[in-house]
Image (cartoon, rainbow, N blue to C red; front, top):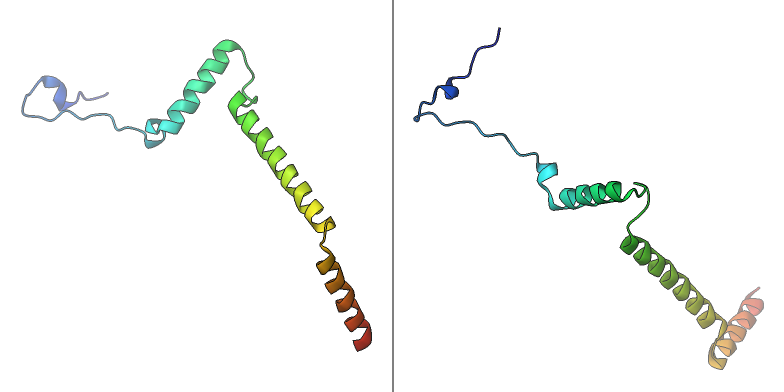
Length: 98
């Protein structure tokens, strides 16, 4: 047996309760993600596939990291004559100390 709430009576002096908002569902990022999932579902796309923009950005990041590593390796290989001479002298000093 359920009792009826008092606020249904229509008493204008009572404040009617409002449903609380879920902060997760109210967040902008959650709404955008939900909208994207619905659109992908309507199109018939897989949920696990990433959006095109995210794939492109990840691809660019990977290429940029690879490019930076190559440049660092080339910089190590191309030592100036001064650096080579310093390295030789350092090796000679190490041999003398031993």
